[in-house]
Length: 513
Image (tube, rainbow, N blue to C red):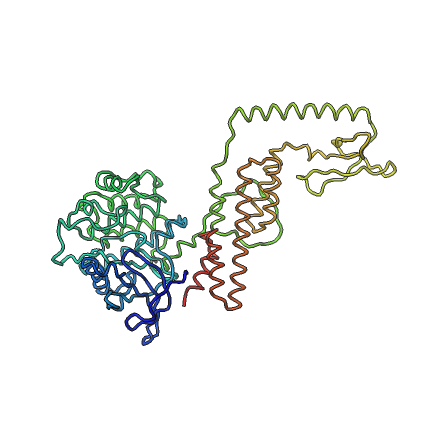
């Protein structure tokens, strides 16, 4: 965290450190000495605090959220004024918001993401029952606390349904990519507008893409008000039927065709979760989706490796699974390569055959320790002759060099040898033998520098070594009691592997009080 000058005291709270800055103001970590607890202090910036409308919005956020006491809504402790600027003291949480999780590559199993949406619906249902519409539901306003359920944040644009200001003509308020059609038109909104925004988040979590994408804000707004999302991106099997129906109803352009309330949408979504093999016990830690392990694709060649080793990290397993899209050379290049190799091997065979006929002396050899590696051995003296194996090896010898023997394995076609090395590299990588995986991948690249699978394996192994090094250094720092150094190592590791379960677990341990 960069060093930022901050006041020593805000209201009755001691300011500990700067946490971040947004459009409305600055957030600090504070300490309530009376109750002996840390809090988040959100202070409106001085530039904003002079604007009457901004102050009203800021106070409305605190007043709206303070009326709500629910496990899925951030808790507001106090609203006050510091040197003329309003501030809010609220629950302090460790973790990340959903927008950052998505940007970091969060694409887990729907059995882990649907509970996140169900928890959002639970919090919104409570707010709607108390007459409050959020009006700005989006991933950055959904927080995933470490080891806790989802928390909905920022009721700064919330509108009290029974307030005098509710009505049409009040302007567009919200974030364009997650707004409802009625918000864009400037019409009056109710809880069904929030449900449309939840539907957009749900679509993004199960497809990996936003429902409405365009090159400009105006084009996005046009699509939301005039088009329907492409549900063909969803799997078409029976298990997904109910989830497709939930999305279709939640994202209806006419609010009358949507779910009447959050409770009814959640009821259908729970059934969709069960259809997909999830658990009905969805009120669990919201960040568990970050730890969902992808299933690695089956290896093409089974390789017998020694002993047990650490399992491959989640991010690397996912990257291996994505390796299905490989470089396919054009057909003319394959034809040229095949003809060239045929000519080369044919000429080499004729040379070797001629030399073998002029030197009929039996040649001895020793078996290679590995059937996949070339066996090149000096020939013993005539007195130590051994019966020649069948088929006999080919001798490569000139009058000025010692006699060498090349076993039949060395004459195996290059693609076969490369595939075997890649299979061994992948198996070594999966079992955690990262250096050996790198050696196998480099051996393939030495023969074919353009082999994309070998290049990807090498990068995966190098990344895994970085993660292992950062984990080791972080644990060493923890043993020495240096929490900040450990956090730096964990953050450096997450920069390489954002979804690595071990790094995320260690981050959780370091950030929890």
